[in-house]
Length: 192
Image 1 (cartoon, rainbow, N blue to C red):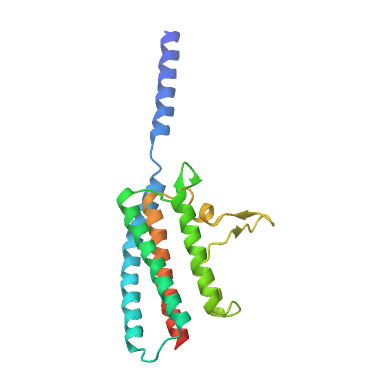
Image 2: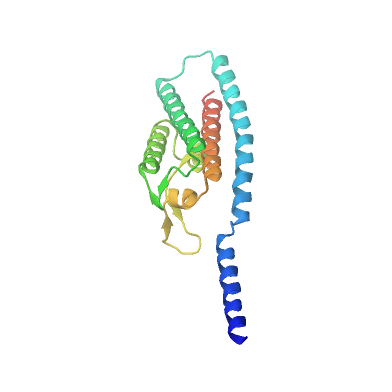
């Protein structure tokens, strides 16, 4: 009888352990779904910002300096790149910047394109202005300094995208698209 109770006890313990391990983390799934819903709201913001930008460009009657036109084209090209990422992430339902916790080619391309855009912005916008500080805050991809450990830095992608589930990844891409449109609108406001 003791043997039967001991075996039954072990079976129950093993079943409890395996059922606990298979349980999905509901918090992460709820958070991921929430980001999916927020992403839809950000798309509405993007639509509004695009319309606002179109109005500004139509109402601007004077000729624009060539460096501003070049910057505007670079920003539009970067936005189209983000549109491609947005579509691809929705299609594949995955974090496009990582393969097995390692930054992949797409992640490296994102950092490269982001840095190229920031260099183009630096050629037009004075680095010592509030406008530039805001642009850098919204679009910069420099390493993130740890608040706890002085001298410790995290790669931008690791800090913001490592381990992010698909809907959350897509949300972050949509936020970046919105930030690009915010910057483009602010540049047109500043330029007037």
